[in-house]
Image 1 (cartoon, rainbow, N blue to C red):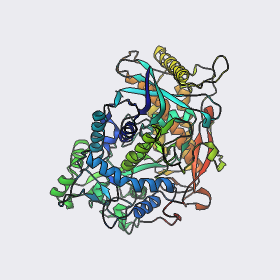
Image 2 (cartoon, rainbow, N blue to C red):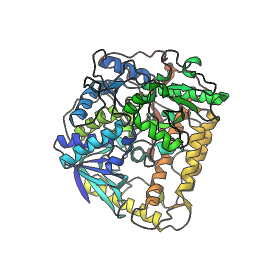
Image 3 (cartoon, rainbow, N blue to C red):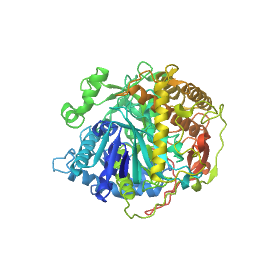
Image 4 (tube, rainbow, N blue to C red):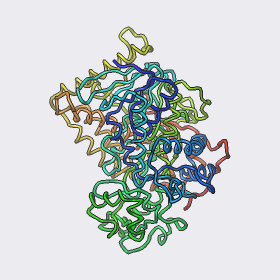
Length: 619
């Protein structure tokens, strides 16, 4: 059993920044990650960090762009916090040695990005996330922060109070991938989830295989509501064969999208008459698919992204990594030919409901980064706003968890913040199965009632019970020698989500996805692990991850079915208009011990700087 003041789960950008911030407040911090920190998915971020650093730009302008990009579903306190604190966090990275690209006068370079009214995206070539990750990991090593790498956290240790808002998180349980050991991690002050996004819910995604939404799924089952899960970003430029990301920086530098008829369709098709390729990502992704569906795509699958006119010198200076990606994965040299691109799942705007200090409704449990929903991005994230979210809110969560006195959050969390319950017509019953089978395979929540009928409340008892439950679950999976393998369940789930809960959605498709998810949940009752070994058992890890994907796929689909309007990244065939009168509210989903409860929370449009009045969103 391990014990620290603060446990940070996940060691990407948000987790590393949280750990450094908590350490600076004097806390004994440990990072627990299923990957070595520099293998975290933050390293795949290419574009840059939006920060107000130059004359002519302003915090107000950045906030306005972000709120407009969110389609007026972002919370003003979170947006203004991001915009005000991103510059100092970016400069801090530079002082820590991050190798930003430079202009001739020595200043950090900034480029235009989609949806921005000013070129404020600070970058390091086309490998900004890679540089950020290594810079932050250096700071962790320098400070001697404990890192448990290749430990897969699979359960939270949470007390079993009936009301989730009365519960406390006292630690986590992890599986040592190298040895097969299952052990507990006690957190005297708090646990910070920084586990990244759920991209593996889809089969065409820019996300790494490790991005299975572990944090949101564990928090959801522990009693924390998930917020705005219907809003999934599909990046307009991914490689068709693999889903590998081609940075928005290509379009920021002047790259042009063409259809098979040679038309620059973003302008000629009227999708974005003012900014063309630099419209927000949801607009560009829908435009590409409209062109493909109308028969104007190449091989009915993709469009072309051309950057040859930028010249070899400029491309190799600012976008060299893109040359290698296109050559290695598509066999296309973008210095000589246009790149093939199409939309692919990229980012989850929704996630674990948190305040601007990273707090969930469970005392001692925090979240930051893509796994969290604060909500900065609302219904659509602007390119260049993900990395500042990691460092700004990672730092805030770290400081708060370490005990720093901070201003009370304006964003309330938990079911008590509800402004009304929701109702949705589903073809099958969502949530946990009503079964008498051994629930170990289904990952029951730590904190079931004690044999003596008392409550689990203390740290030692809560973590020990969670450890006992997780060991039983893993033994159950390893002892079973026949049944269904997780890969069969996962692939069918991913195919259904890609077919039915993609850029364009309709009621029947969403209902079919719910049927398929129910089948996946039923099949998971008979899941088994083919590999009985204890060391580096990726089959066991992927089996546990698949349960998380099932829960999150259902949350995404239920929320999408409930929201009967078109807003940001969420488009409904039956509801193609934004409905401000009825839908300026956050979609909330609580697990409720296996019976998902849909309700709504308010969107805060009143900021410290101004009140953001919803306007027509055009580019």
